[in-house]
Length: 337
Picture 1: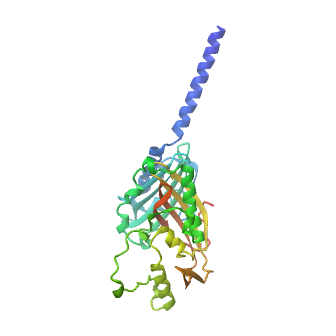
Picture 2: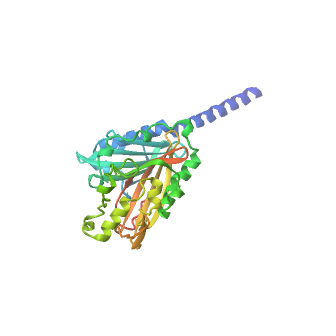
Picture 3: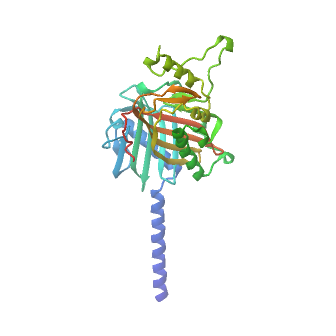
């Protein structure tokens, strides 16, 4: 009788332990589960229905840095999508998932939407939106479909250890803040796109023979036309190296006064993607700077640019970058400090 009781107790303990393990497993999302959650979230946005996905009672929601009640912002205005441009990065370790997609709002207006979700026990506890509207999109031509490297699995031979991916992603912000491209590892053919436009890398238009061509200045703002100093600045920027490392080292972004709230919450080892968030301060206190070795005026305006960067990392180097940037009032916080 004594042995039967002992056996019964052991059986009960076994089933209790097994049930707890199953419960924990059910509350933890793998990569496929996280991506499915994101897709369901985007579908719920279009339906303007917050009840279509599971939210934690204490969920925190921001849109373009503003903390909002759940159900406001794009939850009201989203009307379609996502279109064919879809990039997903999921991290089962942190239970976070990010996406960059093209959506519609108010019937037909384009929105480049960066989203981050954080889960706890299978429910969404954090939702962060970076919504770049039509007026801020540089071109829709590059937002029809994502570059193949950003959606394909990384081969085993090209994979980088998780901890190293984290260091590499964060090092990009060091390189940006210090105007030193050597602080972050880039491939020679690295290409960065921001709000749909190619900001470095890719193919530049073929130039005419040297005897017939002159460097074409970049128009920085309407006031630059006819201003010799601003024309000179535009020409210096246009002449900067067309590589991710070289452009940073040339000082093209020296007008960025600080890079704050640096976060890298999503490491997708299967895709080789690291997703970062930051807040770029532009105080315009620096009046002159060396751009590509030439002393230039540095004024670019006073504003903040909360940004989202998706880094494709191959063999320990950044190969592709897809980014969003929001031009917002100077000093604004991201809501995630």
